[in-house]
Length: 268
Image (cartoon, rainbow, N blue to C red; front, side, top):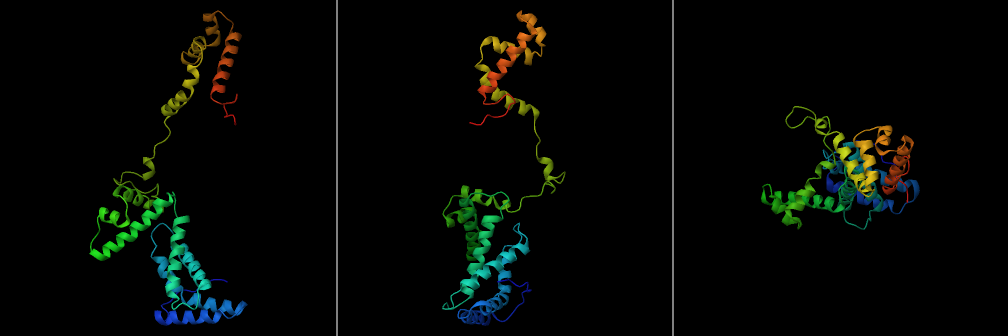
């Protein structure tokens, strides 16, 4: 079945549209092949306005309106195919089906940085609770009232609501709150000193396991930056012997760190 790109209109009154949809799907149930498909397509076109209204409930949440409308149409298609004409109302079945499809899309596909399922569910529950409290009390509910309504703590509620921006992260080109630059300017770069410290912390345990003579050799070569010939003169050995000792010490350190001679991690 294909979904026609019909532009939704106001259409007949809701109750009349609901009755027509139910009647047509009742007839389609007793047909096969192309005849059944034609009737189902007619019901789809009759109810496109409803699907689009539901889709636009979720607009401005980081997903393009065209994508939302396609998801809503898919939900409507599922409702048409699965509807049992013995039910009294097509709307009563189709609306939850379309909304469910939209919510699943947000849950499964719309996150730029995806939080845990628990956080997603808590955020959804908090949104519904806030809307219900706002309608009941005619005022904005407090965080504690929302947390009590969904059965969670204010801390967990703040954490869940903090992921709202994960649907549509702030552009790095957007201005900073102070207006004196772009958001991307606030992202730090690599710090060479921190990288050196990280490397030292990694290699330090392996160096400490060397004996005193080997540690002194490394100190003269890499800390004092002395030449192999100069080191050999102080130790009373040849430059070649210094080179061999350095090679052996470096091999022990690499082995201790699980690296091969090229500095790559050796797979177990």
